[in-house]
Image (spheres, rainbow over the protein chains, first blue to last red):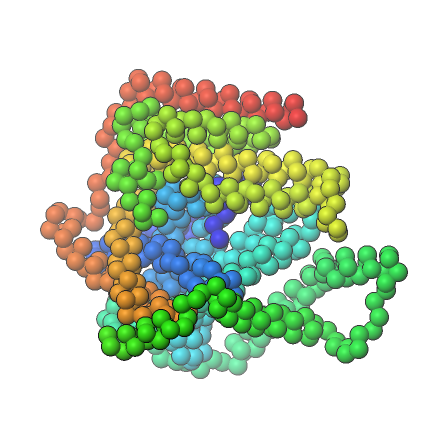
Length: 325
Length: 262
């Protein structure tokens, strides 16, 4: 996720740092204000930052890839300590990661902070409280915060890298290419982060309501009805986004099939013919994507059987051992 | 991270402090030098300056006695990213064909741009390592205060770093207990266990915060940690700063010479 040192050109490094700085300073001010009201909150924030660092370094199994990846943890942080302090703490964490582990960099610190600390935190916080206001259960809001913060972080990273590095290729095509490169790990990871965030927040709310009250996690615990005009505005925004994205993608790039495969096939005298089952629109693409996702899940899960020989008798013993414990 | 990042001396790991040229250098000189070096690295029109910077940084780290294996481990991920950047720029940039792989055409301009970006990644990360592997955290925080960074952020950095290893151990301990109780058997159970682990780590962080605050208050904490720069800037430090500036100027010129030659 972190953009490495030296990847972004100087102008982009300066611009993203300038864009992220006000949020970081705003977060620092909020942390300071809270500390003046409650001096114990400062060590708490430091500990929360350390927790975010540790959480973002936890290995998570990815069934499709058969490997491990890492959550961002920023959705969880934004829900627990509000987005601006989360942005400031993320900035600090990213700085330490750049120095300690060479993950990210100093000239890309602004871009990484903007993506993960600002965009990720605000999207996660907005999703959590937006869904809570609609009246959906806590776990739905928490899951959405985890997943959307993760996806927003990676989407923003893909867009920034495309804008900075697209060269002579169309920005949209490069952005989609980079975003697609993230998909094999990030899509399952977003689902997993949703489950982890929901589980963690559920545990905290259940076991320590005093912590929840002190941090102000549930500022609007009572579900409120959403006015019809808000629903209409949300639907209109979604439609506008959908139409805009479709129009942008249609004008910018036609897809690999049309732009490359069909053109070369036609030049070689193999013009496309009408398919036997003619599905209109993007339904075929949608079905292909869903089929690929399900097949990937099945292969990732069942594929372990080819390599992991412990899943027979020792497992049964393990199960009995677990019951005994 | 945990096995090598716990070095008590420097931020980047088990580096050397106070005995060699870089380790004994004033942290303000190093921070300014690295910042200027990163600017030169990004502004260079050719790969010559970043590669000069990388070789200089490696040489300096070897002279400091930093184990080469540690440096290589730190650079593994950035170098992988550099390779990816090089391969993508080949196809995204330029019009002059270099190589055709089916419908994909690599361009000459893309090769040059890719090499430039990859060299910037290598040069930049090597330069950052010279700072992190030779400077104790306390010195870096004091330097940040000297440069008028917001005190609250400096303090957060100190606190986050201090509790980082504590939390790694805490998380590892909980995870170990879960593994012993077969909480990680099968990926479904593993995910549920990780969710519990996440919540428990956060709750323990909260409880520790209260304990830590009380302990700090007893020791005289009144809302600010004393991260102050106490070292005086001497004539020796001035000479080292001049040496660093001269090396950077030469590197910068090398970058332009490289662009002119190639």
